[in-house]
Image 1 (spheres, one colour):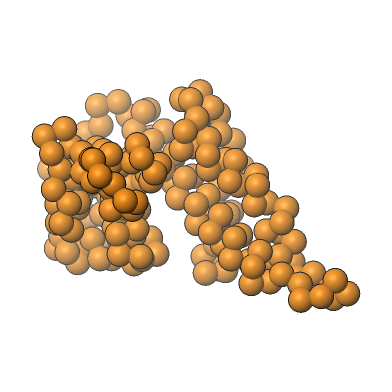
Image 2: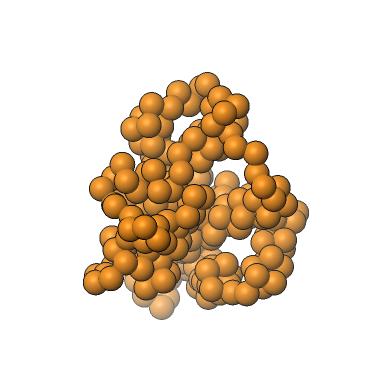
Length: 194
């Protein structure tokens, strides 16, 4: 198990939220810290969170990363430290609850992974579009600027499907992204660029 899997198997979204000062009501809802929320709109499920107001969504690592403006790996390390998890030692069998629906759980894990990678890639493209924009019309275009111009709308579209699409749309998109290692390639490229 890697650090991400160990942390996600050991720490639930509600436990992390409580650790970091968010107190859910009896329905598992809190006021969303990611926008000006007057009424609780952030739902804390066991494995993921979703805000009905601003659309923020993700797993326990995404939540921690967003709360503290960290990259996913830094957020996983913070969770491990705060919850006393030894990243080199896998969680005990008791901590690893058996999934009730293994296929659904596998799909959700793939979906969250795709969503995280697409969001990270989207932020990278937005940065490249500004940072590497040509200073004059006569100069050569930086490859990163060209990639940002070509991919930005498409990646945003895919991220939107994974956030608000129907189950069928999300399942088809995850299947396409996971086949042939496409999403893994994006993830690797982001790590190199980051």
